Amino acid sequence: MTPEIQSQKTRALCQLAPVVPVIVIKDAAHAADLARALVSGGLPVLEVTLRSDAALDSIRAMSRIEGGHVGAGTVLTPDDAKRAKDAGASFAVAPGLTDQLIQACADLDLPLLPGAVTASEVMRASDAGFDMLKFFPAEAVGGAPALKSLAGPLPKVSFCPTGGVSPQNANSYLSLPNVICVGGSWIVTDADVAAGNWQAIEDRARTAAALPRG
Image (cartoon, rainbow, N blue to C red):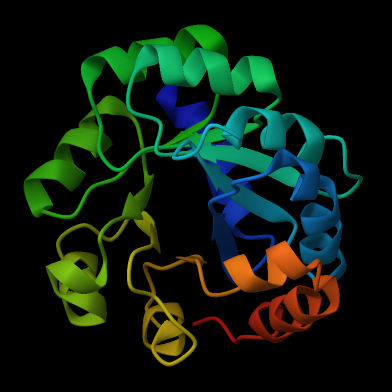
């Protein structure tokens, strides 16, 4: 799968809802119920980061939930990409981009949403064929004003900013012409997951799903 086709697929996923929940799951036993709550709340695209031992088992469980599209985040190496694909991930998200990761995702037919923040990084990703990118860590590198400044010289590239995005600043990103959606960790809290408070998570998802875009 070429980078061009990968970006077509990740762009289509990003267009499904204004927010992609970024999730760290510590116990795979909670994964299916969590996915149901998020999908029911109107957020069908889920990013499970490979930052816990339960991540791959969680992706397996969540990928079986009807209406959901589950991807793996923090994909850093070809091995990460292969393990994510084998677990049922339908896309991969990376904080940056390497030649090895480009080749691995092409070989695996795994759509990749690579990260880029500087003009040079965006240009390199674009040269490789990607026009749908992650902007991470969004707030730390200048937030919405920094992302807005890329729209002029690089108008054909779109972004999903992640990192420090919250209910308080999400609209500042979603109003930009080069932003398709945002990634956020505020939808899913450890306390609600541990307590099985799926209704609270669904309610936050519903509020996030109603956020206006550009």
